[in-house]
Length: 355
Image (cartoon, rainbow, N blue to C red; front, side, top):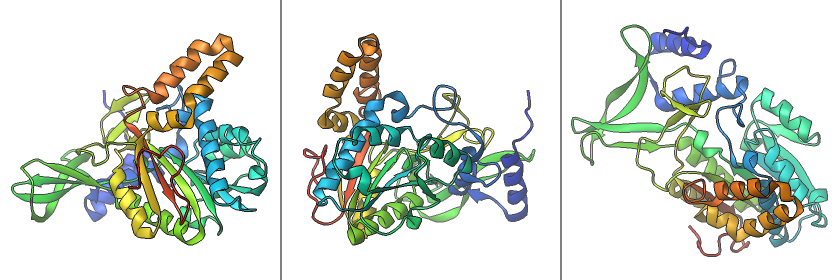
């Protein structure tokens, strides 16, 4: 059965007819953030009723521990009387709600924090504002006010556009999105870019957008102080192709109904760390999420929660397993910390060393 094209599919087809093929990165950017028909502007992606579940939606323990991580970094910074507490891509605001609840007993922390969400989606901003009436919003990282910064970014960098390159007949070509003979979106290879240094069919990915953001964040931390915690999924230097499209918790075709599915790719943590260092920050890790949360004390927190709420003990154990087990989120998901000058090893990274 043939379905009518989405509004974004029609817009992209019109643009391709007028101007020629677009890169996969351009397609991903439009699918996520097109002003009228992009995914995050019109869909509810989070939770069981959405398209995917993130760690904050699984358990309060995740956000609580990240909040306490921020408090520890604030103390390492000398407890500045004012600082920017920011989250990029805060979803429904769940993570920050859990984080702020956990740090209520840290004297002075919440009073010193000015809360900002980096969120371009008007629809998601409304949800976040309902949970955090004191939050202020900006579209981009560079719009945050000056001052020491503590920033959390959970599953943000995986959503940034990637370019894909493939070896064909001895040369590298960039993968592009064009139209087939029936006028439908189709993948193809662009013009040859240069001789290949890899076997036929080899594919590689790179995200200049992610690297630029990491470098800008590193420069901000080096100049004004602070720390950032980036948690995402990926295998360090991932074997391409890793771009995946998910709708209603199931994988679908990359070009299937753009604007109605989440598109993401594995994060190249090494590239992010190198970019942040180029900006002047120190980079720590990446550390597998399971090891990171365990080092922060998630096992002890789970025991206390279960003791306080015996009826939920089985569910709490299941949540702990999902967040930390190697066959769940414990290994594929990783944490990378970026710090300004003189802060030393961040909590959870003692066995990782500086990247």
